Image 1 (spheres, helix red, strand yellow):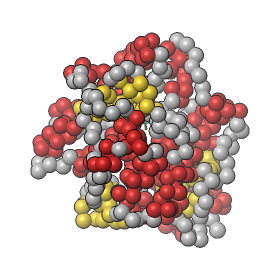
Image 2 (cartoon, rainbow, N blue to C red):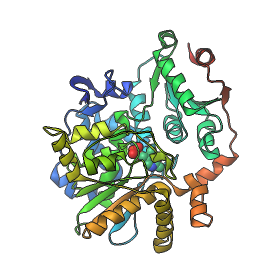
Image 3 (cartoon, rainbow, N blue to C red):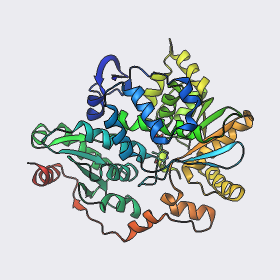
Image 4 (cartoon, rainbow, N blue to C red):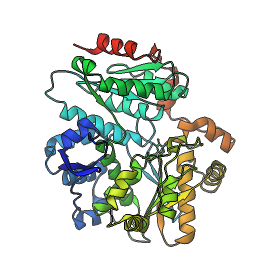
Length: 440
Ligand SMILES: *Cc1c(COP(=O)(O)O)cnc(C)c1O
């Protein structure tokens, strides 16, 4: 498998380098050079295959021998030990529940697959690999549990003290083993600055083999394409054309869907759903991409002002000039944006009309699907429910004016003992700690 940088198509690397490096040196994003179509009989017979069998077929086709079949099978099995069920609201609206993994959000798919790939490519290395992650709360939990007990890899998570929720903090600080947490007496930006400086520090890099678990690593995108096949499979055969509606922030999830469509999944149309951070819906409407600072909303995992995967979307739809790229994208993707008041109304509507508890991110998706289907009535739509409502329990309970159920694995966290090292945001003490604890 060959991947190139979106900034320079002749900058090409293999799968191992793309995964271990995360980002090309030119600051572009890695993309597969060839996205092969799957055989049509495979697509037509999806219903005969399990999620793992679909995953195997898709990855094998894309990886082109970069990982031997038996190894691929093992690492897929290790990564995906939880389901992705489709729930029916009515004849036209369906919910794909992506929150059955350990951190209760879809990011588990990407993080667990990336951990497996990194561990696989790290085999035979005598020195431990140390992964540094700065988190504002959400990604950290998925990465921590994804790499938990992965041989040869240690994860050090930096999070801003007092700025993550209690349960998020527990997800970062209670695993132990190869996962350590540093509670930084500062902001998320301070955490990120410490990590950035560590990567640039040549002296530190002689003591430790460092890597990142970057959210735009191609190893996080590929596994997200898999559940589009899985969802399509679960919808009854025949009937109206299928559209996917994706609550979006950095647009990794939506880009993964485009990848699935390129590989032959017959998706009729994609719907990009955002909160007030609407740079992509605005681009789809006007043809101008204008990034800006993000604003805080109820669906805060989607509060992104300059989505990192937009470069990949442009690349996928690249035409002969700007306006043909725009038209190519508009032919396959529609954008909708909603303010928080409407999100709350939608949460109540889904609760009352369908007796289903949807989280604020999924609710934005529900609104977008509903708006799209008003204009395109003869379609069946699948909303990606990106997180379990209990992850946002305070907002959900306040909006619905009732208690909601907390999954046992989340509730159990509350009693676990937090273990973190408190640290001022000073580079030298951070570096000293890393060397003392992890080098050698
Ligand atoms: C990360 C996240 C999103 C946004 O996904 P992107 O791939 O960045 O567009 C949406 N919902 C939840 C709950 C998330 O954690």
